Length: 230
Image 1 (cartoon, rainbow, N blue to C red):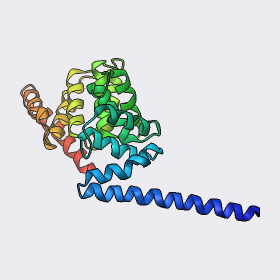
Image 2 (cartoon, helix red, strand yellow; image 1 turned 90 degrees about the vertical axis):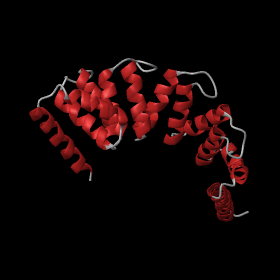
Image 3 (cartoon, rainbow, N blue to C red; image 1 turned 120 degrees about the vertical axis):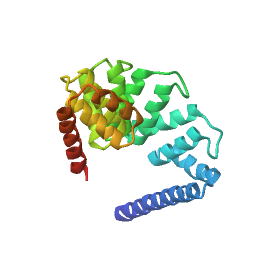
Image 4 (cartoon, one colour; image 1 turned 135 degrees about the vertical axis):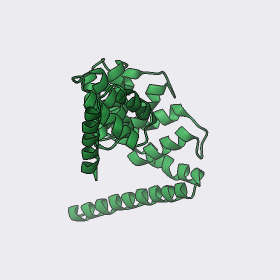
């Protein structure tokens, strides 16, 4: 067979496989949207076994929630790990959560820290908050309040309400940063404006120890931050 013809046939074969794979994935997605989870499982399982990363993530989610299949944290962990190894951020976060909570296997804070960090570096805001908490508490990650500050600040840049509150705590306590009640008030205020309940109580307690001038300056900084996010 002529070499050029062989190449053309090979390309066409690859295109057919890709088209078929995409069709099966899309059919699974449409079934999922209809809440026909059994069909979604049937379409995604072969793709997941072949290494299709998004099918692995989606199928892992179905096992995690028990949709269309019996709930299995162990199988969810296996699927998320396969996708996580391919660099998929959502699966890295989900895998970290399973290790963190001891679901589907042994609880392992070191693994949780590692996978949160991989997801956090890709911008997962929830991973960043959880990673900051592990660094703050020295659980799985070494105790390092400066690293905790870094990850809380990264999450705050994305508007995460819990991260605002965590930053307020660091500034109030002087952990990882110089103690600064104005900055603490600012971050608690941002948490309160975002509806974070812990921030509301913390803000009220801190305000009782501040002068009106300090509180006004802190509120100005909080308003300035919010204006920059619009």
